[in-house]
Image (cartoon, rainbow, N blue to C red):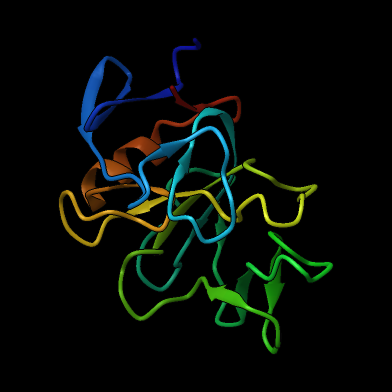
Length: 164
């Protein structure tokens, strides 16, 4: 493990010698991730990008990229752009990254099934803000806004999310 890794333990993530409460997917942890199963995949996932809402916060790190009004993420496993960032208009199934709620104001993008996606193996394992403490995600890992911001501000380009 590297010093700047996030390590998922039952109910929390260890990062920089601190513990941060978190939420995981409603389907629990899995070794066999499938699109739509609501599970969080075990493994070592690199943090490959940081996205943020420039109209709601300052960039947490110098390498963060702003989320635009037409930014989407494809979750259509039968489409060539599956598990890729796409832009509206986009007809296949997708997630809007610029949401009205604050859940995606700050997103840490992992390399789960990305950038070379295998159809049906699950899309968009993000680290993002939770709806509320303990509320499960669709497969992502989620934190309070303050904890997520602290984590993002202290990431390094080599940081990883380790899920055992």
